[in-house]
Length: 166
Length: 166
Image 1 (cartoon, each protein chain N blue to C red):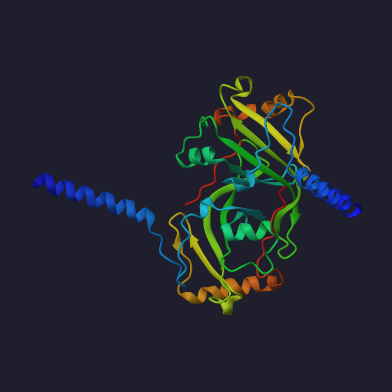
Image 2 (image 1 turned 60 degrees about the vertical axis):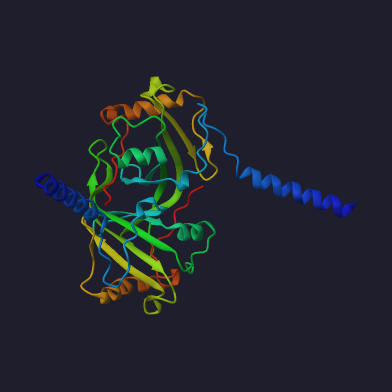
């Protein structure tokens, strides 16, 4: 009986730990965390000097298809852009190279013109830090995102320009 | 008959243009251009202040598997790292952001400890510009690559540190 109890306790602990690393809470506006974003393909990169961060922008299959067929103004429904942000750091082996340091957050723009009419057809979401804490106290956080993206309405509210790659 | 000639001429021209964009000459050391590198997944990014370029480093499946299982010192045979390089440009809609401008080149390191014993187990190759012109007059160009990478022997001759991503 004691052995069975120990076994059940260990099994429960193992399951709990395994699940914890899998579970990322949704954004307050209901957008689920895209678990496979690390497998998405490259759209571009940037180095923001105003807040000392490096960024890489990736896209889901629909977004990459749109990039490669030059069909990104407007972006098609179903396209999702993901942006990973890191604090800048110095490469020790090449001191004139700025490289990603501490991970800051990952954020997404999901195009669905029917679902998100009040924010330019885009759903916004962000998860902070290595613990992927959802950004925003409630769903109104999206107006902060949209406010910042409004000046680039002419490029369908997207700052990122796709990088040229042969 | 005249119409047939015109048709054949147009068909031949079309075929020729289509094939030209597909054919990339191999590197002088025999390494073939990895045509699908734009589909590879992210390893890291960097901004080199000494030569004003932005870079994104991607890896083939074998390389990404090695990154995710923390098995990169040494990197396993079969891993290929690709690095895209652009001149820096200013994002017009956010002037404090440095973004990729003109494409400079794409370069690769291919790990095969049996094939490349004289250059740390790595095969080097680079293709320049949008026309993807192979770098190097002859196969001895690899000693230029290897010379620059020798100071980072401790990290298996690789400068890139993998970015932290949750």
